[in-house]
Length: 289
Image (cartoon, rainbow, N blue to C red; front, side, top):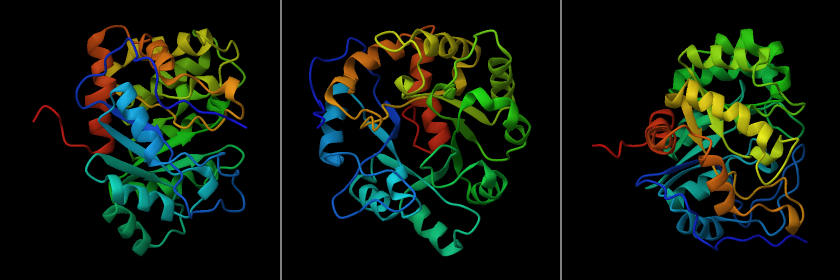
């Protein structure tokens, strides 16, 4: 059994007005898990629980990402967006076979992107990268891409040819570790420098070998990327931390926020990641207007 905390001591880091959480999942009642994906998280944390976290951390806007448990059935995502459309956007999981009618329904429902998860349980893998890119580009969508970043050399050529804007999820997710001065980070920099790639700070605990409280290995790469291209970083909570299966593994969201946001070189870089960069990538109205 797992007990999650949705409130507590306020974070020391105050989020700016308009702050956007670009990566979270919610699980509404009545939408079961589908074959091929993982089970629903225990307790099915939904919008009520996430709204508590919003108030706790100071989040104003957010992006609901299709959970692997629901695979390519978007009913849960659309239902959640219907309740939150004024402050939320969505990321789906389409493939080359997704109908034009479903794409239009998703767009009308507030979806602005799609995801590829080339890991166990993912609905759409890198084998469909080019097909997904073609559909996303035509729709004006972004793509969130997640794979074992330790294998980036196997994919960098294909990734560099994407026409859609895209974000590499979860700090690159280098599951076998990475040297800050290694070839993998150099490839990542080149992708970001190409102008269509973003880098997401979210879920550092999923790939950190060194672990809490500092996640120093993930921090080293993230600091490099935040200094290298502050205009290409976005941030997310990764609520409800699905990789945690027992209470002792569940992170304190305020402490995690303070740790991760300390990896930016200055306040301006933090503000870009939390507001402007996410506005650009996910199509939110600018807070500056």
